[in-house]
Image (cartoon, rainbow, N blue to C red; front, side, top):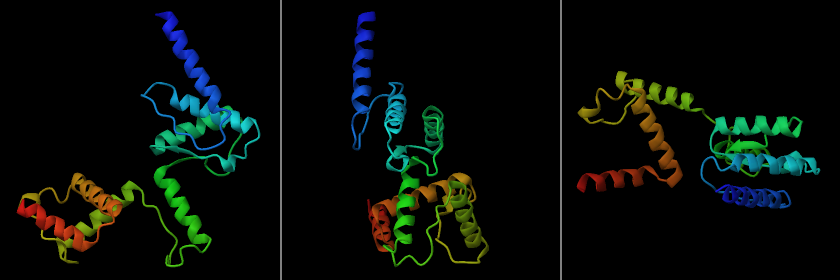
Length: 187
């Protein structure tokens, strides 16, 4: 059994060694706890120690917490600080691409600079809209009576935020949403 573990470690080390010589994008997949993050940081440190410009390095993490953890480990192990974050989430990276494209004049139709809203900011905005609907300041959707108690809850606001995210991802227009709603009622 110890021989198998040694062979597995040897194979894993070979992969890590190979990663340190690759100069293009790499996707490393594996189950939790298999050492992907450690291999990633070791590879990044090796490239930086070999003279790679930190501006040429981009690591995408699934969450802000993971990105911060990787960024801290990378900074500590590379023994340097970075002026730009080399570790980002997908949403932060996408936001930065849009921001830079606007600055470079590639998105002339954007009148104002883009602003990335945090989850709590989105929750507050949706809560204010729902409150405005409830008090009659603005017209809002006619919610089913079964949802009356849910409308003021954080969970309901979260579901609306998730709905907006899916609408945006799918590129749906109001007419598309209405059509899907009618189809759902007929089913």
